[in-house]
Each structure stands twice: as C-alpha cells, then as structure tokens.
Image 1: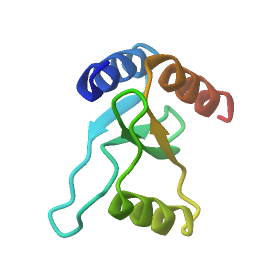
Image 2: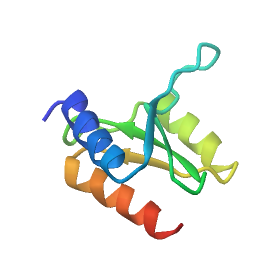
Image 3: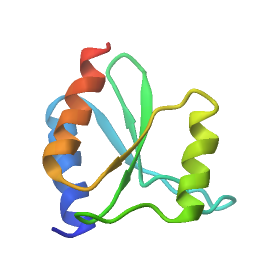
Image 4: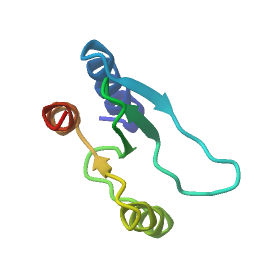
Length: 94
C-alpha cells in the first residue's frame, strides 16, 4: 500500500474519532514528521507515514530522536491497522 493511502485512511479514522490531523511542514527544518495529531484534550503527537515495510531516512531518524528527547511522542506507521491502533492508544491515555 502506498504511503498516501495509509496516511489518508489513518487520518480519516482519526477525524472520525474527533482527533485533528494536520499536515505538518516546517520550512526551516527538513525531515519533520508528516502529520501532527491533536487529541480532544489538547495532547499532541507526530506521525511519520511510510509505505508498507519502508523505514525512515537517517535524517528523519535524527529528527524523531530530537523530538523524543523533548518528550514528544513520534510514531512511524507503515500500515493502516497500526495507524488505527496508534490513534486508539493515544485516545486511551486521555
């Protein structure tokens, strides 16, 4: 499955669960995660989407580490079921 298909399905699921899914870009920083999700409680987390079996680039890995060192949740998702589980798990923490 293509990255954009996985991303679209997970974002649709998030929206149905009242979670905002913003496409995230940062002109001043390369390799930032694809999406910023915002839960109804205001809690936020990032997600990097990949096609099935693909891994983040070294630059993306460095950026994910940088965010995690600031106590930010960053997920790497390469299939729809894992993406739905991510949404459900984060909502359960609210």
